[in-house]
Length: 502
Image (spheres, rainbow, N blue to C red):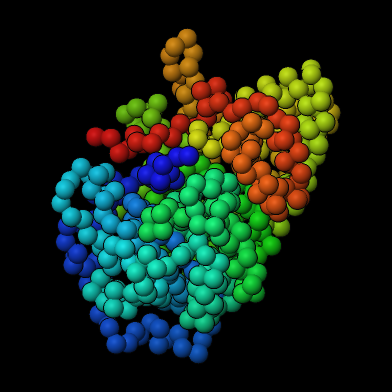
């Protein structure tokens, strides 16, 4: 099994160092107040008092952890969120449950220093639960928001999530709720490692170094939402590789929309504040707000932060560009997508029994785009296209076209940054674009039947809502073609990413 340290590093690969320097969110002094223009209030909060007896249009529930080195995702965004909350006719409230990283160890390692690094808000190894308001300051942050020592808080536990949901709804009642699970993500990760019994598999996001790297399973969110009778306007998956069909299908009954990306994501504060600004701009039209959020998220670099496209480009060395995507999807559209995946599963499962057809299917499998070289997640539309290219049947053409249509109808927006792939050609690296579809869609697991992950945990996969809808595991039980990142055009994501190298 992978070591915990490697796992934690592989779950993010975000542009941390530059953001730390640019935003000043982690510094050697803890008292530099970014909100000095806001009156400090430790006994009462005019913002909260103003909401008494009222129902907000939206309450955003921010839930997660620093995971060792991305506390920036919250601490760097706080001043920007406050700015968006401090507007005339504000429609949004913002509640938080967040465990700070266990220590500054990974920050010091990344910055090559032995000097202590202090978080801009709060203290290492503590969990905070509070409503973020324009009157939250670095001075009153711990007093007003401290919840427990992070070692005592199991973010991955269903009961913890349920308590948070109930607390959030009571604290900041609203017509609509948006849940933002945040920080290190791994998609529909089947790997058990040395996890507590209750979280053995399908870990999705928020790998907490205070809890030996335990992450929150997709099913834990689904169960908590069901048992608290909470229906969300949206889940905003603020972490790596969360736009996998397995993840989205599991949570779909409990939310109208899902935001996320299939690639490694960057720690952009815009993920946290853009949605607030967008909702305040279009409070009565969620899809219009989502489109506005995409414009902010992918907007140009500013003095303070980066847009999604900007952060992926290396002007000096295009070979070190990174691919990326992020989008908003209608949960109701997943049924039509999964119907085509079921058709695809039936075709490749049956075709695998014929040697000649099996060879063609294997060729498609060895050509499909992988979102990350260490995970068996591939682009579902690209795979359907390769199946059609290789089998050349009317049936596979129809599946591809219908799947493309279903994806388009489910999409509110999608940002696709097709920047690079590296393929060895006569010993030289060649810079080209991928996938063959010239766009990204959504992810799907593609294990070979002798893959250790599949051998150990296929029963977990088969219990998923996605597999019950599509029967995709029938093909995975037969598939003998291993995904090889040295052969498949995998997006390269190294343990030490290029933006952390001097």
